[in-house]
Length: 221
Image 1: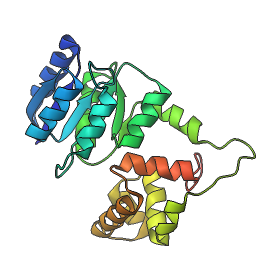
Image 2 (image 1 turned 180 degrees about the horizontal axis):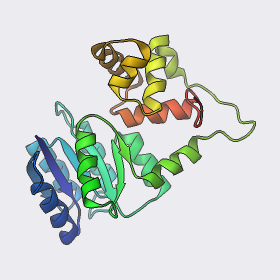
Image 3 (image 1 turned 30 degrees about the vertical axis):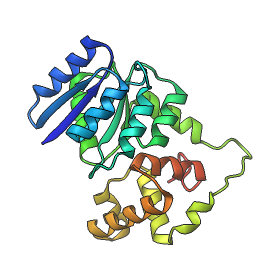
Image 4 (image 1 turned 45 degrees about the vertical axis):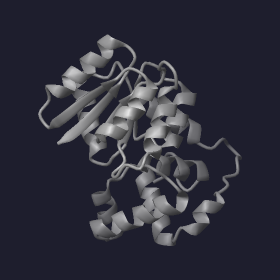
């Protein structure tokens, strides 16, 4: 059962998304917030599993609110999904860096949105197709460009680097376990250590680090 917080300053959109989620089996509490400050307050009070967060809100922005929510002492922390009309590079990168697990556009069909919430609640990340294309273009090295691996990756063991590279290629924990001949529990342990060593909040942030560092190159096998 998944609890959801819907954050949007447009009453009609917020109410529509909330009603869609409420009517779907498998979802429990659905809370609504109209601005960023209210979202932080309600997230701390209700501890939702997933937060659907618009970017542009009255007062503090949705990304600032998301960052504050992820900084709360909530265990487990909620999984933040940006749901917006703005397909903008700056918003996409900022959302990833603060630890958002997804970036979806408001023209996403209802059933796909519900499937995305379930996927993200289960521990994976999910992004709109246009966002994925933009990320691939952004992280594809230009001809002759030198790739520099950040010092943080020196903290990782060879096996942790293997796990990180497979996470960046989109494999699930089960698929990583099969690929590396490990148990699911061992993969989770490696992921926990990777997140701790690199001070990351989400799988999506791990993907960004892997691409920015050159550990994984788009199009590589």
